[in-house]
Image (cartoon, rainbow, N blue to C red; front, side, top):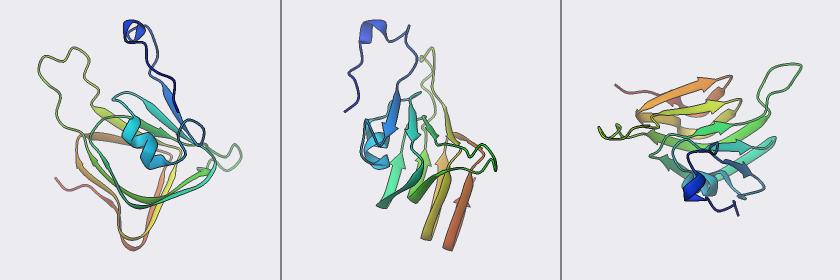
Length: 139
């Protein structure tokens, strides 16, 4: 499991990187453990899970990029629902931007990524769905 946080030194530290595999065996377990501002680093290869990951906090999902082609080498096969609540007015440092970087997200049916709320940034990502919607951003 991931190293415990030292609350006294939290301001001086960079947010932790939760590694899959390594710190957590699966992407859903890392997503459940992540705190706002954390990074989930997903190793090269395929990572799959049943059902949908419900995300209600801003964090980064970062994979690996092929140095020659530039394509993502981290394949996430599953569904996501992304909804970051608006920041509280008294929060001095709200974490309100979620990111997906260098990942290939794919699902067979339904909606691969459903953005319900919050601000999300996708950098060098491929999002596919064989029998449904790849990316849904209703507003």
